[in-house]
Length: 96
Image (tube, rainbow, N blue to C red; front, side, top):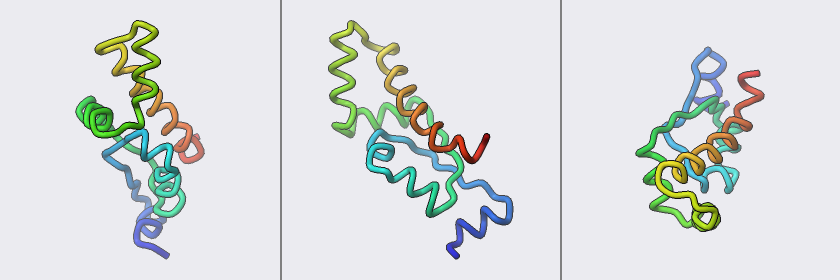
């Protein structure tokens, strides 16, 4: 048994302080949930800003939303909500 599973059994909740589209699309977050008992994550605008600037994973959505006339804060929050919605679906079984 790994340490994080033991912590979970003792009532501790392990959360990540990070979210990126790569973390979601690669299956890494799902593996963290399954293999390391991760039960949640936190984020903030700075984390999302860094994720968007440092990854090509957002390029398609950025271009699509720009063609739809979205920009600035609206564009930023729509991208963030897409990621958060996907992450929430992974954590649903833990919190239902």
